[in-house]
Image (cartoon, rainbow, N blue to C red; front, side):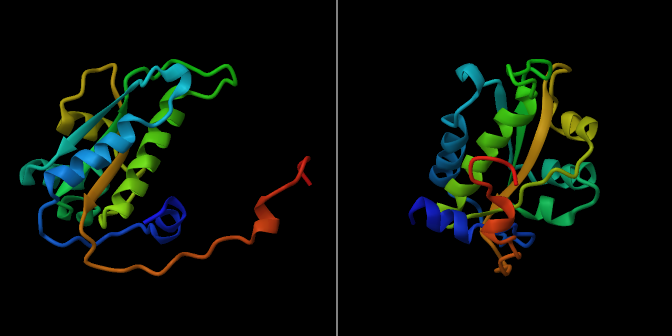
Length: 170
């Protein structure tokens, strides 16, 4: 599958088959995040991989009772290791860099026949507790990963002329 095909076919999946994700595929997904670009190549992230059923169940509560989070055989928590650093533009590195990494992971997963759902609805303190994060590490994204037990339709997208401006904002 080429990159554009992965981009076009990626969906937010909320139903997962109970089968395990092969270690080789999991490592490829993690590698996609690891090699993602980051501000000044600092790579200020950590990826916490949760496979134990009891920890995945704890993640359900931490993610506002979204049961499918615990249904996925793998949950990856993408964390920022420096919540204070900012880019020269003023944007927080902790918001941008982990987002690039998780996007790489979602596309790699799609290319490998796996499904994900990018979760931003969670209680950071609860996720930190489940993952036993140190105080200076912040969870930014939660990413359930597994084989899809559903095939969601593509969600509507705005037409190009509503989101693309040439030369100036108009």
